[in-house]
Amino acid sequence: MSKRIAVLVSGGGTNLQALIDAQGRNELGGGEIVAVIASKPGAYALERAARAGIPGYVVARKDYPSSQAMTVALVDKLRELDIDLVVLAGFMVILTQEMVQAFPNAILNVHPALIPSFCGEGCYGLHVHEKALAYGVKVTGATVHFVSEECDGGPIVLQKAVYIQDGDTPEVLQRRVMEQAEWVILPQAVSLFCQGRLRVEGRTVRILPQ
Ligand code: GAR
Image (tube, rainbow, N blue to C red; front, side, top):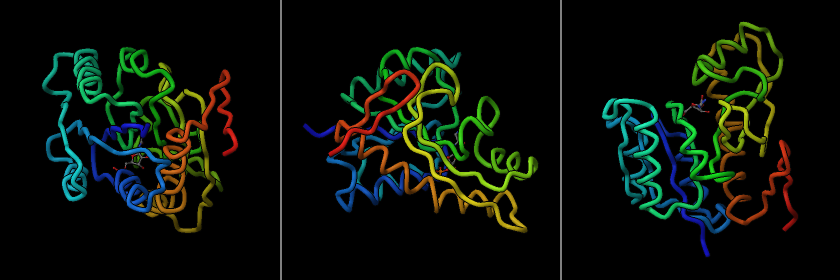
């Protein structure tokens, strides 16, 4: 049976778009994006969802007294929608343990660096690329990993390297990492999950042959 996917977003939603496009090419391993949930009412990602005919919902942090209360509301919504896979695609709210407990090894996150570099609390969005450039690394990239209770610390599914170039600004680097890495490996990881080809063994994710 096809996997029911919910994509959680906070902003522009280019990673969501990559997933929508992959689904349009039948490249999501039979999975179907059945919901897009935004942490902010005005998120442009919601427009992308509407354009693709995917129902959009808002679960905003400001509507709840705590992160825990927001997480519980989100879990309720995901259960009501009978979701099999949750994808965090530029989702900028840190969820509490109730989320991971409700969806063990069934939440994927995309992070714009090669974890364990430039990750953890406070390291998100453009900040990640600012830190990579400030450190002077020559190679960065993106990671898709399962979400565990440790921020950016769950088992790694896929990674892809991207070279720094002379004159890079955080914005230029962010765009290159998206184009060359995030928009490639996020749909691939979702497809592998939907085909039942990801097996978590401790910290390692084994990719099973077709
Ligand atoms: C992406 O670069 C994503 O990897 C990053 O935010 C951006 C969202 O862009 N996520 C994080 O930093 C999470 N720690 P998008 O809304 O265009 O997909």
